[in-house]
Image (cartoon, rainbow, N blue to C red):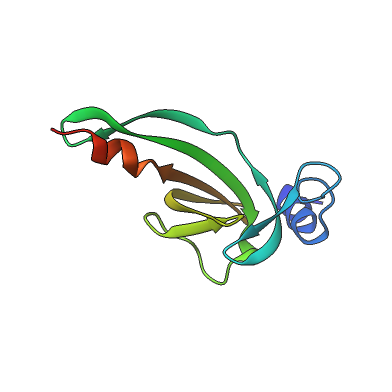
Length: 115
């Protein structure tokens, strides 16, 4: 059995990665309850024009089956995870799993700083 066949079977049957007893958890993504894995968040100052800082964003990852989307998500589109709206910054299709990087921007910090 080839690796791609094993990966496809795992995506369909939830044997390892998309098994709620092991790695995946249920979250509401764009209004649908799906099994997925949320990655760790990291925060850093954003570069705005020539100035670094002003707005801080947390960058996180979600690993979700491509079959759970009606079409492929794209950078700069919004994504709603558990009732919180984020902006997609990067999408990679890895053997039928979307690895989506997303951020939530802190607009208050940006507005409170004057150039």
